[in-house]
Image (cartoon, rainbow, N blue to C red):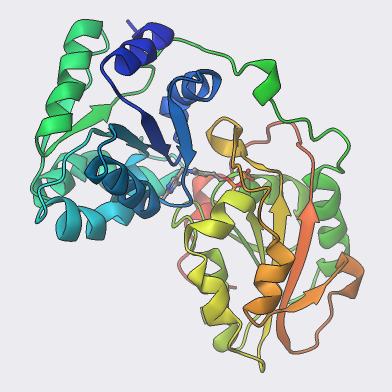
Length: 345
Ligand SMILES: Cc1ncc(C[n+]2csc(CCOP(=O)(O)OP(=O)(O)O)c2C)c(N)n1
């Protein structure tokens, strides 16, 4: 059985909870939708789990009642905040983490390690854990209360919540933008049979590259969200020509990668940022990043701005291409044998 999401969120509000600080996981999609729909709780879309945890700490220390929701793969990002802020300063608030599983042969290898080790990770942070009771809403709420007052984390399993659609006023309309597949096909055409290495980021970019860039040399980075540009920087410092293709949520998770990459001139590295204004792969949640001017940020970080795929060339430098794009239909994930590559071609 799944918890009634609307009742659950409304009861949290009745219990005084004020903010939901989130990096999305598809397991929490419906709670996120309800929090966005419901004006009585504030949805704080966070660039990373570390950001979500620090914002929640500030809220709690200033008298509010925040809740954090993250994916198990992101719990490691919160490690520093947990061990050096929450624990020593005895700050508590509910941290809800999904528990992603892994089946042998599955290409989602980013979840393989924590599929068995999540409780140990939580334990190593000095936290107890409870598994959210999806059968009994009152018990589930008392588990959240416990997590608000003790260093206890709440694990969410798949299908814990009933379906809630986003209200129309929160839905994104990207129909006027050209879908990403069109640009990926153009890249495929231009770089087929070239030695340029393409790195696709976690999320739907890599998945779509698998469908629309069949003839290029691609590395599909299933996990390590936020690390694609830096992975590409390492490869280009080692002499590769590299083009990183990423999404807008991935771009901000470890944005310091831009400032590090911008220091270099004598390498061949390009970062193409596909901005679809959402976390497509975890359920299409709005990234709420329209206040960002990505081109200005990249330029100020030292990258050279180019405007079109046509301008991509073998000239040395660290280049940045921003593309606002629309949404393609779902495409299949790349299979395990193409994902699990430990050396670049
Ligand atoms: C550290 C970490 N946190 C959260 C996730 C869950 N996650 C996977 S993809 C994704 C969103 C990707 O969105 P974006 O980069 O905009 O690309 P899109 O899927 O929209 O193409 C999220 C939140 C993750 N894999 N790793």
